[in-house]
Length: 501
Ligand SMILES: Cc1cc2nc3c(=O)[nH]c(=O)nc-3n(C[C@H](O)[C@H](O)[C@H](O)COP(=O)(O)OP(=O)(O)OC[C@H]3O[C@@H](n4cnc5c(N)ncnc54)[C@H](O)[C@@H]3O)c2cc1C
Image (cartoon, rainbow, N blue to C red):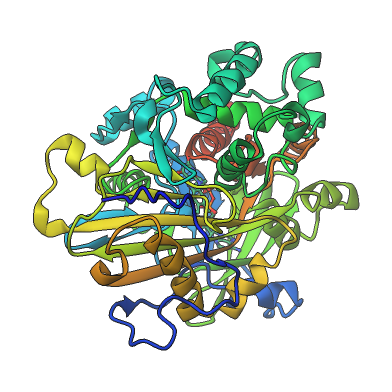
């Protein structure tokens, strides 16, 4: 069970570099190799060490999609009846929505849940035969002064619930300005434009600092930035998660990525090539050529009429040398946080917490998701599956996070988290079977003040034959942004295709 310590909160150092809980003792759990990002080819490209490009092309397709994360898969899904080639650098599709399995219990290495299940998302789920579980607002639980508080409303007169009531009242007029709770680009009206330019923290003056620490955790977990690093527009938008349901698949968002991949495969084989790294895109009037390497190091060129780029803006700026300086300046404006995700696999279920369990400073992680929740809700949970706790530790942009992850001391990073979790979860360390650490180097674009104005300028770059469709191009990082980005790019391809085809 989750402990409710009377002492009140985490008192360990939790500081990177501090001796881990297991230091000096024999480790009893398996520590899996790193999963997530592999920096080798990206760093080679950053250093300008680009292999000689092919002189001629071997193939021609209508559309090339760069990246096989949720946005690339969504693009391919909407183009499945057309002639496309998807190029993904890693051996597996899914990007930040990749997952693994423990004793038949699927869990995520990144994205876990969605905030929408109607409109285009509902249609997509129905077409793929997926039924997400709807979790009400008690899906969230908050740790404060040694106690867990479920949801945002409670009879308890604790300052936490009073602060939530005040924050939600403050959010409501802003939410009304967002059609269907979404932030359409370009953002509409002077009120939303003003909020885009202000830090969220400017709206949180006078709140209890421990409450603000929890709100910081929500902002960091969703956007790799604290309340003072995110814009008020992004902050108010994210706070909808406090009162709206979440939609969860067994295995998290990787279940959606897998379903998309198998539908794409059904409609035409070998159109998604994994282990293919794109080094260069040359744009010309009416088309583009895309140069990529395969796992054996060989270089290939494919010609296309349109190219959909779902790599982050930073990578997009590097692989398209033809872009002018003005365009590159916009692409390079974005800041990225990095992310450590730790999956703690246990043979026994020892938590009875909520789905998403939030802590504030001085804990170094933001929240911990109980992966078996959707299995329990659908009745498919079996005791032998045990339990997986997915712990999210985001790092702000320009913090030491990226270096810590690159250095990659798994033993130390796992130990620091175990030390902290042992203070929250009884018998945590004794029940651990396997720990899987995942690192995301440029995990998320930080929705800093001015981001939405910048995104509007970025859309102007989105011109024939180039279509930009990473999730960050459509708003705050989310599966919805990725699906929207992919869908819009596919529609643009098809619109032009119909006109000329
Ligand atoms: C830790 C974490 C937790 C998250 N949790 C949630 C959540 O619970 N809910 C939610 O909605 N969202 C969540 N997100 C946001 C998540 O980013 C989106 O949901 C979505 O999965 C992003 O999809 P994408 O395709 O835009 O980007 P990515 O998943 O980053 O996909 C881009 C793809 O492009 C490939 N690529 C890049 N460069 C090249 C190249 N040169 N050549 C070939 N391939 C290349 C990459 O390998 C990658 O597969 C989370 C993100 C992280 C990091």
